[in-house]
Image (cartoon, rainbow, N blue to C red; front, side, top):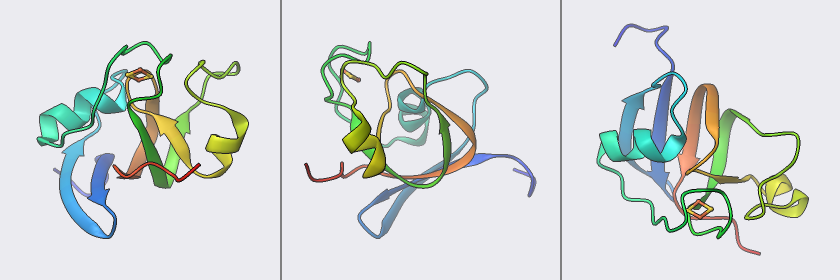
Length: 100
Ligand code: FES
């Protein structure tokens, strides 16, 4: 990985648990699988909220209309759904979802 390759770093709380190069057009969940990081998922379509994680750094490509599994309040807490949301460049993800 060269220095300017965008990467996703996964954490559990403060503990780093994996890193993976960003796969263009892939949702975060897919990259977690490549990194060997387990994120629970269920519907994989943005509805159930099972795959909720916390975005610690970087930006994700939030759709204008939030999927049913996410709301503004969660987004403000850093919440993001991994099954259907793609990163915009490098990101840091905490697999522990925001408390709500
Ligand atoms: S798995 Fe259901 S919202 Fe992501």
